Length: 369
Image (tube, rainbow, N blue to C red; front, side):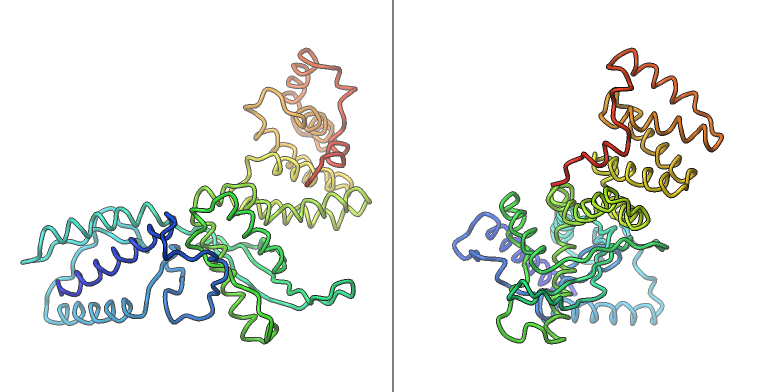
């Protein structure tokens, strides 16, 4: 057993050393990591286990099965199972308890490896699932694009209204280029599925590429700097914001409302509810609800926006949200005194409120690029 654990430790340390060498630009590192495609599950396939992105080879899986069989045999003989390490969570590695006759040096090495692995892998609270892939016919293009529908699923929760996007291969390709320009070192070990000149539309190829895109997005989301970057976040919801703005400008409020709502869910799943884009989304929801005579829902959107703006002394949308909230509160019979007091403070500190645009005017004029 000790020999097997030592073998696994050497294997993990050698793999980690290879990653460090590639990240630092070693001579054997690939110049074009995006040229590698995740085509099958034979080696190093990324799988999501208990909310954690994990890399496990078949050799390690066989060793784990052997260990489980030995532990199960020990339990049948009346030996008590080893207690879980204190502080270890489901789906994470924990410090290996020292067994009788085991080496304390080996235990310390495994504990150090565990600490390093916990720092490099982020728990996956968000899952990405490609639910469908279709071929889009466009007469203006000589290429036949593929459209992938992706659901953003929060692990351990049931979403009544799922957040979904539809993206082409070229959209993924653009995201990959932008992130490699800004996060070259972090992106060095992340593979991107390449295009095929032949057999590009077979069911097998589309299925493998769909799985590769799921892995690609999961890899990106596991790195804190990348998942918080505008490039990564706007890949998901910028197109919806632009479409919702166009629909609102043309008076198609019912269609716009559905698009604003999906953009809201996307930002909520991605943890981007403190950005200016999220405030604009709340403005879009409030305007569309009001135009559709759904005043209670519009009032709720304004209240949520004002809660986010509570700590800000000034913001371009603060005045318009306060005016809309006072008007809607009067319509639905809610308390509006706090918003009126804040409007009074704005009136004394800045230009006359009559010169400020309405919430709808702010929404229409906001540049979304």
